[in-house]
Amino acid sequence: MNAQQLSEASAMQLMAATEHTRAQIHTGLAHLRQVAAARGLPPVTW
Image 1 (cartoon, rainbow, N blue to C red):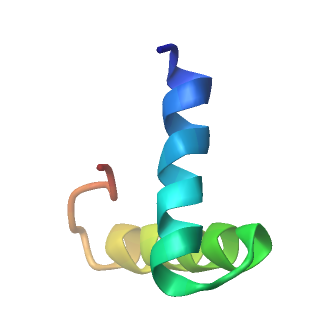
Image 2: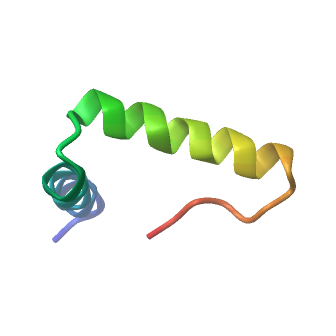
């Protein structure tokens, strides 16, 4: 499984678990990354 497939699988899992759309997942993760960077926290990864 390459990085793109892994990312797609993770997005699908988040969509199924939260019942949010792909766009909502993307927006939420982008927000978390911005907040983490602003506070000097480590990058968001999974």
